[in-house]
Image (spheres, rainbow, N blue to C red):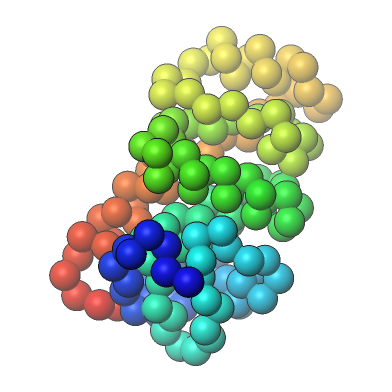
Length: 150
């Protein structure tokens, strides 16, 4: 199933790993365990035919897992952010309390020390996880704007 007639690009495991910040083994394992809402067909091999939305969803999945969310919860959050990205509504920053598994995730375009301190004070231990969602989208946009197939 192709996500909204998007162009596809051959993406090597190594390039995907570099783009999303996880190793190729993690990517293969994650794609075996979750279904991307963006319609990735799951074809395996050294390279995978992927859309920009597939990679954005995979990158959000990796970011949420890296931040402490369980894989299945992270898949749900990633799907939500893909819907926001398609609607042009991804905020620059996503932040949530440490240990919340991203359940308290909030998006903003301006990150302030006051916002972070307020959220941190509500968690035990006091801490905040921050993901730069805008940069995730920009990195993958740049990759797809490149002419060469990787």
